[in-house]
Image (cartoon, helix red, strand yellow):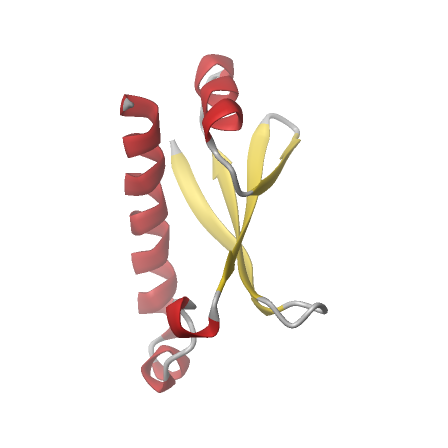
Length: 91
């Protein structure tokens, strides 16, 4: 399983969001994730696309440091989402 951030920012409804694409997963894993994840999601070409909304204080890209070290923050968030999804699959 691989996770890639495809977009992030402030949505039109003034909510902070991060879009994740989850790929290299089999159908069983995809179905388990679809059953267990409560965030907004859709399936496109066998890949799970998640949209997670954050309060401003919890938005991973809201700090000044994230503006200067964007790639580090993206990679860290992808790792954290991978760990979160693996945890969901273990339950």
